[in-house]
Image 1: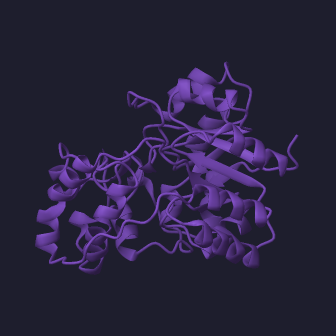
Image 2: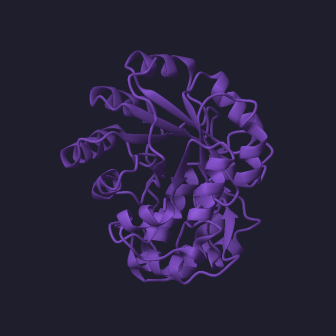
Length: 333
């Protein structure tokens, strides 16, 4: 048995690259389970982030990790992916060379979590090894998987994890898929398909923007709901004003699924970059992330929405500006 049980009705989605220590603390203060999105961090950065959150709150929080790919990288594919991006480099006047960071950071992150006595860890893009699961459980850590299909939900339970995020097609940001082929199942349908065949707690994620959405998820068997897009426009969220306004001004059917930015499917605002690279060769994650980083950085500097990765879910048009506390109170009324 773990020493911590998941009791929070609402969970802040990790949102790697967006979430800051202050935002995690604000979510914890509002009664949510706050989450650190450590997917883009190395071991040292993960350790520092955890320490900063612990300095701000004594409440429990989750650390989310990206499970690394097991296969090697095809250099021909990487070179082709880089060539596909050259027109964007040229248009934005970018001359810097992409900086590829080592992908061998997962074990360092695991050690940082153990050293800092974190009690809740979630995983995206797969299931960690049996050795990693055993090691974390020996330290009393509550483990949460992410799944987008019935098969993935079953795999998470069979691996011995304590709970699973059931992520529907509506979800903004990266899809937690780790099996082929890609299946786009709504959150409600996925919950209905798995609630009778697994026994671990189900955490609903994807498109949850209203009190009616929350009520529906809980009635369908979810123990908790994980919230992302609706929190991006919270006053305490420290994402850019450009990103917030893109969400607030988005209409219905404004989003798309794309691999163009990171090499993994993610849902964000449809723009010129996502449309022109629909059929393009992309490098595997995380290499595509590093190849496009200069483009995203420069487009943000120029306030050019056409080349920015503006993650948001299908129901982004329902977002409002408010405090985290006000958002949660509205959802749980």
